[in-house]
Every structure is written in structure tokens, then in C-alpha cells.
Amino acid sequence: MSKVITTLPEGFAHRMVDWQRLHGRQSLPWQNTRDPYRVWLSEIMLQQTQVSTVLDYFPRFLGRFPDVAALAAAPQDDVLALWSGLGYYSRARNLHKCAQEVMGRFGGTFPRRAEDLQTLPGIGRSTAAAIAAFCFDERAAILDGNVKRVLTRVLGYGEDLAVAKNEKALWALAQDLLPEPATNMPRYTQALMDLGATVCLPRKAQCQACPVSTVCQAQAQGEPLAYPVKTRKLKRSSATLWLLWAVNAQGQVWLQKRPDTGIWAGLFSLPVFETEAQLLAAWSQGAQPEFITPWKHVLTHRDLHLHPVRMTGSAPSAPSCEGQWVDAQAWPTLGLPAPIRTLLAS
Image (cartoon, rainbow, N blue to C red; front, side, top):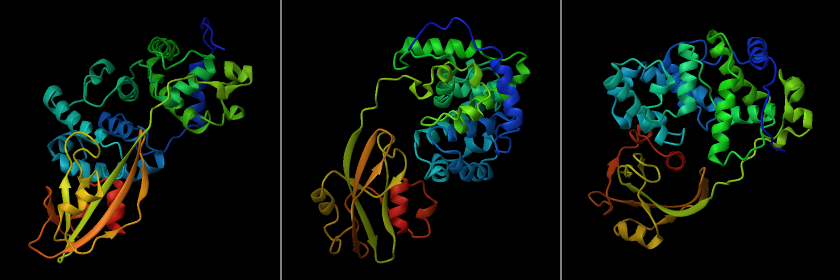
């Protein structure tokens, strides 16, 4: 299936730009702006997160942190609290660090070149290119998961993308396909994103709606779903977590701040234990434990088997593990992992 790409599809960039103008997404709240702060924020939020979810978080985040200076000046706990429920919390921590570096290294102004943007925390090559293309018309190629799918199908690029040199070669091809003049970069970049998100889908290629189907090698071969090729699979792991849901007579819940590394890093959580015995020993003065029905919480690389145990007690008794009593009115404002937030709200 693989072959050396010697000719590029004729008129590819022009077709994409024309299609986006007529059929692409035009009204998303982070579109139609040249503000790198808003573009950067949307790009980070959209990593491994559906547009429908980001539509809810994006305006709230801007309401609290309207610019990079406000974000940089905020405590990290406030950033994590507003991010709570979006998942992949390293994104939020890097977002905060990035804002501080933009203020410290670049005087509060995002650099204009992808090469410089890529030196900031949490901004990889594709995200840097997206910001530079949308905001500054730089001819820089993006290559996220959706775009890899579009380009490998159009080009008939069947090399294994799990091999670094093959992905590097695809980057070069993506760069060769960029439009002239550079003023077409914002719409072209958006076209790639739109096509991958709405037409050239992982399990369904809607070739009849595709503006480049007539120059698409995968369509010509009759096997669009054969692309992209990536053999290395993510290794999944699992962990069993026992969660102490301690409540005192005032209705306060015992929460601890998670370490800066590892699962739920930097968030507030119910205390986590490896075994039931360790959990029960942590609050010997707690009333008769109530074993909540356990459930599985699925992360990208890991399945978490959660076993909550609810116990009540009276002040001044407190669990022996690290933490603090938090009022029922206060915990909803903290940065909590989604399953913990759901549990406490039940």
C-alpha cells in the first residue's frame, strides 16, 4: 500500500480554502479572531476533548481569565478549579505555566513565530503552527490526529506513523501542501481541521462531501479506512483505588491536595488508599463504613477501579491522613477530578 510520494494532489490547498469558505465551520467562539490568547486557549482545550464540551468551558474560562496577564496572575488552584471536569489536567498546569512565561519572557505578548511558540510549556509543534497560522499568517503546517488522517488518505501515505522517520516525512509533505499566498493560511488551516472533524472521519469517510475526493489516493483505491497506518498500540493498565469519603457532623468533607505528579496531580481529592484495610485504619473513629458500589473510570491509558467508602464522625475527630475539612458550599469551587465531583454531588 505504501509508496514514495512523488507528486502532490493538484490544487489541494485551493480546493480546501474554497470549501471552508462555503461549507466549513464559521461560528465557533474561538474563530474569526486574530487574538493568540483565545486561539491558544481553544487549541489546548480541544486536545483530546470534543468541541461540544469545550463550547461550555471556553466562555467561562475567558470570563474569569480574559487575557494572558489575568491567567498568569491567578493561583494555580483557581485555574485547576475552572478546568475541573475537562480532564488531562497537565494541560491546565502547563496553561498556567505558559501564561507566566509569556509574561516573563515575552513581555505579555505571544511570539509570532511557531518556532518561538514551541518553546513555551504545553505548546507542541502542531499547536504552535496553528497559533502562528491563524494569528500571524505564518506558513506553518499543523499535523494533529485529524489532519494526519486527512493527509495520509489524500496522499495514499501508507507508511507506519509509529516510526519516527515516517511521521517526519509526513510533516514535510504537510509543509509542501501549504497555500500561497500566506494570507490563505488561517482558512486553509481551519479547512483541514473541519474536514477531519466533520467529513473524513475515523470510521466513516464521507467521500461524496469531500472537496478533494477526486485527487484522493485512498478514495481511488477504494479503501479510505486503511489510512492512517500506525501499528504501535497504547498499553493499557489498571489500578484499584480506595476512596475515603469522610464527613463530619457539620457536613464537611475531608479533602487532600494530590501530589504534583501522578494521577490527579495538583487537584483536591478524597484520600486515596491502595487497600480497604489502609482506608479503614486511616479513620478509626469514623462511624460504620458504608461501602459504595464500585465503578470503573476510564482514562486514556488506564482503567481506574474506584471503591468509595463513606464514613461519618464528630468533631474534633479527623482522619489520620493529610487533608482538611471543607464546607459543603466550598468544595464545588475546588479543582476536583470528575469522578470525585460526581460522587460528592450524588
